[in-house]
Image (cartoon, rainbow over all chains, first blue to last red; front, side, top):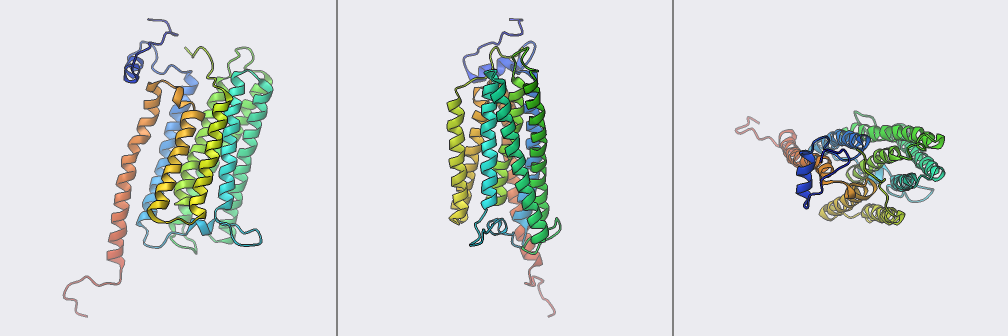
Length: 226
Length: 114
């Protein structure tokens, strides 16, 4: 029972938790990179949670009406304004990127270098598109609508601070993810993982990217839709 | 130390969930487009949000195939944050009502000279 590769197989899920935590050498039987990425994502969850909870509290307690996101984030293409259309497109882009990333991981484990690199590049490109659209949104709000962190003409003054902080942090995470993906994609292309045949690094990058999409699911629901 | 084989599942699993995520996103958007209001709006927003989040974590992030020790270590702490969310929502409500009372034009001072 002392071998590194041996993992006890308990019959119940609780049994497997007890076995893992009382194990001799390691608790989480995954590559250390994966365990650490999950722990990092957990800490990032706390950060975004503090922002979202703060926003929730400020919006609930505001006596001045909160600006209506349906109207604020509407775009008109010459005709009637379509509510939240840019946000819907951004959501579509990010979900597509999660799909290409999941496929990249799958092709990585099949050791198909070419397709993995292409799918990772597609993911990075979609991420960059998302950031571009978010930058457009910011420009429109700052320049055209006069939204500032300390006030805006549409309603509660805390709207700007909440919006810029939450979407700013998220956009920063997406940007960092794009760079991260490009670096790993280049390593795959270069053949760094050919020797070991181990493409775990692609899966770990994938975890980060899905997290970025996950955060957007919450931001979309709580900030734009609510 | 690492698992024997990479985490491979048929690509169709990911494609199905991908499609499902599009459907759920579309439905979320419809909630706003149809201008639903009140509790119906908020309930639907939350349901679609949790479904999307659940599928992304379980399938795309592979949690459904991980050992329970990892699942609990990652899912339990954010689950506990629900208590924080609940408490802050209650406190926010309290602050809102106290602001309405104190900053409103109604004079609550008893035996006011004017």
